[in-house]
Image 1 (cartoon, rainbow, N blue to C red):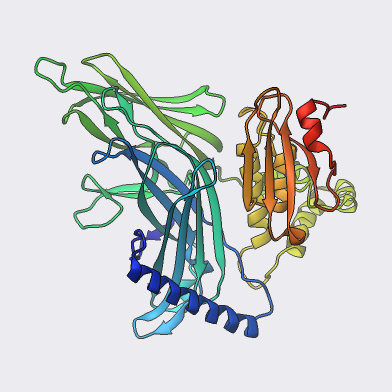
Image 2 (cartoon, rainbow, N blue to C red; image 1 turned 180 degrees about the vertical axis):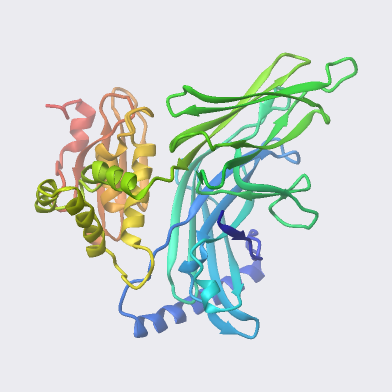
Length: 472
């Protein structure tokens, strides 16, 4: 199991006059740091990966809102440590922005996270994750959560966007909160953001587990149990693992619990030792024995299967051409086809080495980012959950090639006009955009116009969308 630790940070709060002054000072420091690095380093700041997840819970103080926990994580080895009286210290500026469906910012926070280590060798440990969470209150609905982490010393940064739906919680119907996935749940009597009901719940924002860990831990809350004289005092819990098509993979049976009141905390874990690698869905079902009513909540997670070197090489070869279809040249793909098994494994290693932006670091940042984009495309742009072919759609291709858009304008179908989206990239080729149209109404968008060099161009796209002649 990796080693994890959380670090103290300044909790984000709405800005007061004092906060504005501090914020201006922070901007000044960042400008000075940027100038300093511009004079001493010619290369662009390095990027690193951030895990981001969230879960919404009932807000007992305000029924019109939900309490949302945002979980994040990144590897400590990406940070630059400087010597201080306290030891070697890395400081990370965290920035959280939450936007509603219309793109309006409804929440904005900034805080510092610090990491202190004893020596340089400890700082570069490859299996050390910084994990933390922040809580916010939001009105139920769909949101885009943006998180950016910037290393103050090196200006290396990571940024990620999560599309999330915040639940609306009833005051009457039996209901489960969202599911929080965790690396571990342990008894803890200290204070801290990760403590719940006397247990330290260490979140897994990447939602990725291995057989080596053996367990997937989870936390959820159950609301509106019938707790009245004469009512049956028990409720049932059932845990299942499904595949992404909804087919049952494993049933962990029923548990009967005594009601602690009209709500209950559900904390447990499942053993994944017998499950294959791949993407799964953890489904939790609760039943109130007094009323017979049921509630369900679920969360997707991934198991990384450990393979032998020969098995890994065979799987890598079988998927390689599909995974690099948009970034490899036709000459490279033709050469790959002509090689034997050993030659293909060597070719794959050299393919990624040529694209490594910084050979001095232990990881290949380009490769990591490419596979993050590939996974995101398959998760969000596939024709169905079963096909997993998001990489082979126009939106998936654009996301893999150009990354997360800086801005997305969504237009829903109305008066015979198909739904369409505009993706804007402000820094790409001085500012470009892509227009995607859902011609069939099934959520698969086709690229119909872009001002990006080399992409399809149709200056009359808008009129053709309105007239329904795009397919002609």
